[in-house]
Amino acid sequence: MMINLGAEFGTHLESSEDATELIDILNKIPKDDFIIDFKEVMFVTMNFAQAYYTAKYESDKKISEINLSDEVTVVMGAADEACNP
Image 1 (tube, rainbow, N blue to C red):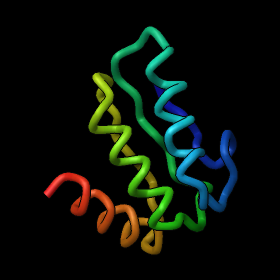
Image 2: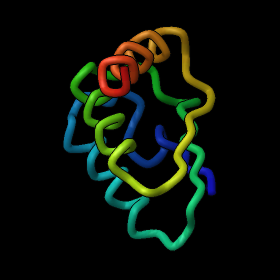
Image 3: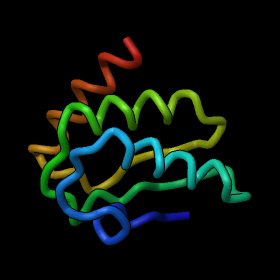
Image 4: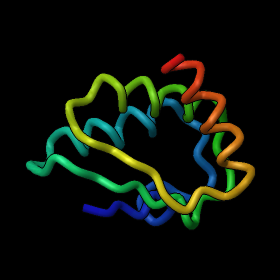
């Protein structure tokens, strides 16, 4: 199942609460595999990114990401590395 993150949460993701809310929503859906489409997302904070990866790794769902811009890739990559060394 594909989720358009920009359409659902906006193009600027700053809050750790948004990240945990996203994963909480996915955990309630009776599917196992999700693709998070970052196509419309222009900016994420480290707070969002770290909360996203923390919640993602605690979830039993298979969650992957696509269409990250170069700027978003840098922040998300740093957070992923910090949360999953």
